[in-house]
Image 1 (cartoon, rainbow, N blue to C red):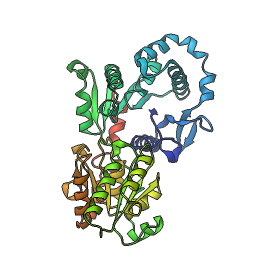
Image 2 (cartoon, helix red, strand yellow):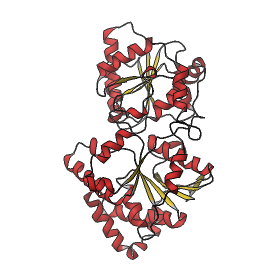
Image 3 (cartoon, one colour):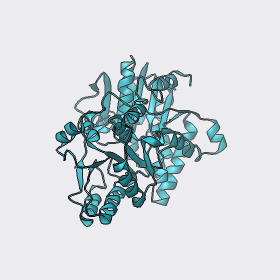
Image 4 (cartoon, rainbow, N blue to C red):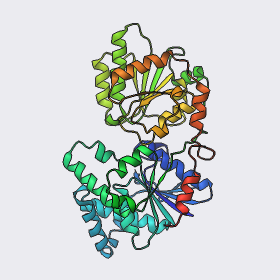
Length: 410
């Protein structure tokens, strides 16, 4: 089967943005390729690639090429009705230049790869492009709703309303939708009326992990590798530095702990990059925590293997979390997590393996950190739980569920 994934790729593959969705798209693509499928990725976060397509581990990656768009601009005249429909569908959310450029990009990739099925990651902006470009060919389209943050966390009420209208319009067109957790599924379906819900076929498929990449190693070895104190307690945050992820809550929690007890001694490592970097650096200076908190920058495998193994606790106090990849990766290394209560209940390990705290609550997080550093954790149980999400052999998630969706009659 020829399967086209439409979504981002992680930085280690050439993507310019980071996040769990990019990791999921790449892992899904290469595991499908190992199963004997022909797989390509339309990667809109891979600008001006050195060639089209770039081939990695057997997967064809089509980056966004300005030269390619310019070359195919004449085809716009032959598809003026489709362009008009797309612009009307997006309204003010995308300008006509963006619609035309993306139309040319999608048109080329779909013609060049000629997929049997398309899997679009995110319903909002990618789905309409795939849908309108393939409308006449009737290629089955599967869509994964990874989040609805464009509605949940949009501060501009006008843009929020426009995003909601776009999601509802897309939902009327989408027939097959995958959700990665039940919380996300219920929130999304709650946006629709009964008639809209009845027209959708939807599946709950947990996101698998590549468990071969992360595993327990000596804490001494890990800390030596990342040049950290071999015995001092260490807590770790790994995520994009975005307000949704809650790194600012962690900084405030650490400040609370040191205000309570000046003799405390533990290090905090914040791994990631993103728009909140300067704000976090300012906060760390404000609270005089320069010697306690280190902004480590973005890291990828294999560096992350050492960071996870070096840590005594992993912290992810996010306001919204579609795929808690970093928490599960830390657990594969035996590191116990403290995560937000906003993580879907069906993704949570047994209570003996985690602490949960409300988002935006530094006092609760400070208390959990203090308890977590003193607790005797069941490391073996933590590792085994994370391994249940293995791509090939997982009992909670594996690749078979995706293949069944691709092969069902649309």
